[in-house]
Length: 111
Length: 118
Image: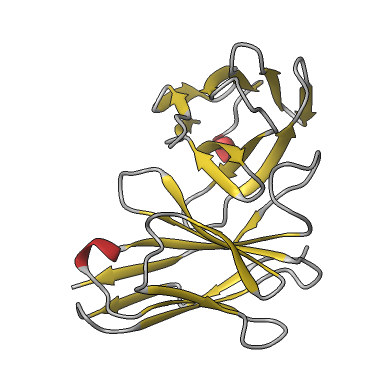
C-alpha cells in the first residue's frame, strides 16, 4: 500500500482569500499525480494531471505545482469564491490502473 | 460533456443479499474501473477492466465481487453476498487509455452509488 497524504484535512477561508494545500506521495517510481475536485453529490472532476518535475499547471484561479524528487504537489486557489467549496483529492497512480488517493482537503469558502 | 453515469444512486440491502451496481462509461473509453469509499476513509481501488477481462484487482476484490460488461455500454459490479462492511460509496470510472501512466491521461468518475448494508 502506497502512502498518499494530504494536508490540511479541512480549511475554512473567507471569500477573496488565497489558499493552498499539499499532497505528498512516494518519490520513487513516479508516473503522474492527479488532482480532482469533488463537490458533494457530484462526480469527482479532474483538475490536473501532473507528470514532470517542476510542472506548473493552471486552470482559471486554480494552479498546481509538482516536485517529484521530494514527493509533493501543491494546489493553490487565488481569490477563493464560495463555489470553490469542495473536497480536493490527489491521486497517485501505481502500475497502469491503480490509483492511491489521499484523504482529501475539504475547503469551505465563506461569503 | 460526456460523463460516466451510475445507477442506482443509493441502495439499501439486507446482509447476505446480492447487489448489482451499474455503470455506463464514456462511450469511446476502453478502460473501466471500480473504486469505493467507506465513510471516513480514503477512496480505494477495487478493480480495473480492459478488453473484457480484469487487468488488475485489489485484495478487497475477493470471490464475492465480480465485474462484467454484458453489452457494449454497461459495466457492472456484482457483490454476491453483501456484508455490513461492504457499505460504502462505489464509484465507477473510465479512461480512454491505460489509467495514470500516460501523460495527460485522465480517469473520469461517475457520481457514485451509495450502498448501505443492514
